[in-house]
Image (cartoon, rainbow, N blue to C red; front, side):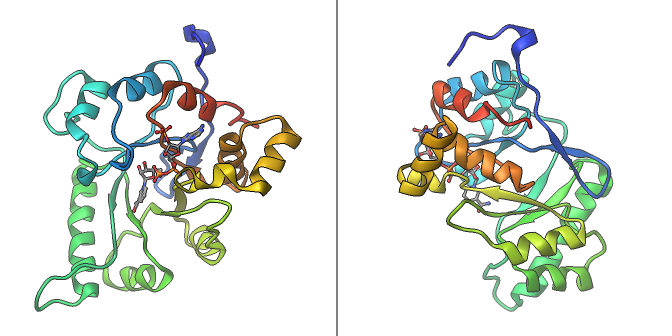
Length: 231
Ligand SMILES: NC(=O)c1ccc[n+]([C@@H]2O[C@H](COP(=O)([O-])OP(=O)(O)OC[C@H]3O[C@@H](n4cnc5c(N)ncnc54)[C@H](OP(=O)(O)O)[C@@H]3O)[C@@H](O)[C@H]2O)c1
């Protein structure tokens, strides 16, 4: 961790969405695994200049994030969301197929997008057949598909498909939940490039053009994860 002045707060490259908006290539995860640190989120926003926070209702920290971002809390406490994702393609609704439920859910997201409540909409954990069906059933192609992506989980076919279809590919678990950080190959690269193992993983995602959202509850590690992101 370091003390920062306004001029030393980093800015991050962005990736264009198909609707003309830009998404920062580096964000911060807030998964419930490993807990939530309000102090760390505030540090990420204030001292590291991060403007991309990934969360979900099940992570249980929306009210605290509302305070971190806006200084007030009513769930997230924001007037709009930059990006709203459908978390999972499968569900179990009696009497309806998964395809029908996905299409119905996606149409609700399309309405929120049309109303301006969400500036972009996307999906998560979708496979190519799910995206192909959605194209047939609905009118807006997702702006983003968020999928697990790290050196030991490389869904290259999906990455290529998303590029062809104008869908931004966003990778979650970029550190393989921390497990990548002790792998001998990552340790060798860290030694070779004089970076930390986490920096090697994050830079690997970014050099592949993949939006990435490492999580840490520790200020020191958030600072570390934000270094060497630009070319
Ligand atoms: N859409 C989905 O289905 C889905 C699924 C999973 C995750 N996600 C999102 O993706 C985000 C990232 O995934 P993730 O949190 O599962 O895993 P991750 O970011 O790959 O790894 C997080 C783990 O790495 C540790 N860590 C972080 N930086 C470190 C560093 N510099 N040195 C050593 N250890 C470090 C963290 O511990 P400390 O906190 O102790 O630093 C934590 O245990 C989530 O938080 C969530 O927002 C989405």
